[in-house]
Image 1: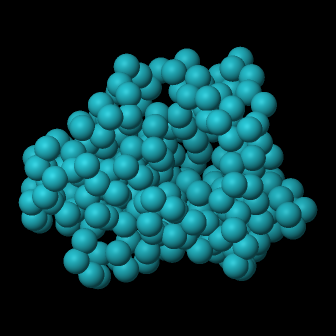
Image 2: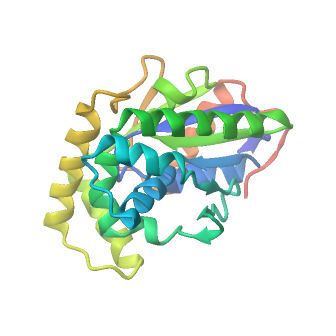
Image 3: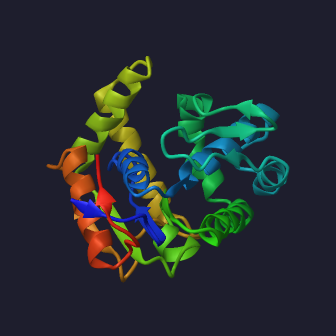
Amino acid sequence: MAHAELRGVVALDGPSGTGKSTVARKLAAALSASYLDTGAMYRAVTLAVLRAGVPVADADAVAEVAAASLPEMGSDPRDPAVSMAGEDVALEIRGPEVTGAVSAVSAVARVRELLVAEQRRIIADALASPGGVVVEGRDIGTVVARDAGLKVYLTASAQARARRRSDQDVAAGRLADLERTHADVQRRDAFDSGRAVSPLRMAEDAVELDTTDLDVAGVLDRLLGLAEARGLFAGVGTIR
């Protein structure tokens, strides 16, 4: 497919296990764009909270840790680094302890206020020079980047998402339990969709894309077509 370097913002939202991270990185790489994983930012703050020994139910204490622990995010989709005070935490933030606590930390209003402001700063920096940015998360189209040129809400069946999560655990060398992962997926769905601040939902002007029966290449092809249709390409080249 002919393409151009991305100009503007592509916002990818959706629940866990829909393939957001994989396709967002591939889309950004294909279009010579910057990349931002906002979920990794919440995970990094959650790791800081756990290391500080702060109860996740103590919103004030969690917010205090968050204010002092904003992560540094790499923008290269081929190697999206996540660090805190110079320490690489990209692997540790994917562990089960962080996964079990991140929804509670993400629901704290002050944490979301701090990280949304940081996310908007990162997006603005990416747009300050020629190029674009692919941003993934759960509230990008509804809160973080409401004026994004393309908003896509990725969905998939709970069974498919649990299977993908289990496959990711195996690939990372972690123990995988499909039944337990399925229950965790449903728990996070309920928590993220029911929180009072920035709940997980599809933006009114977003395109819904069900990835249940699509492989990565199929999803990427759909996204490239949508970006092209929105006029977000600035030059012509070849995707390989």
